[in-house]
Length: 71
Image (cartoon, rainbow, N blue to C red; front, top):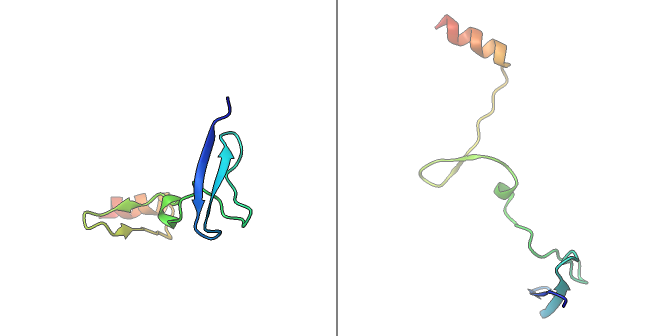
């Protein structure tokens, strides 16, 4: 018994069937099941307001420890 998944391709405007063990790529090149948001691939903290917060630092861990100990 073959397990089949059906996706609707909005580019081709038709339904496309795939077996479970085959990558779901349409003839037009669209990959099904992939998420479109970049935040799905980057690990970021979210604030209570729902906005994404990213923190960058140019100091090394050793420099940061020295600065904190001097306070």
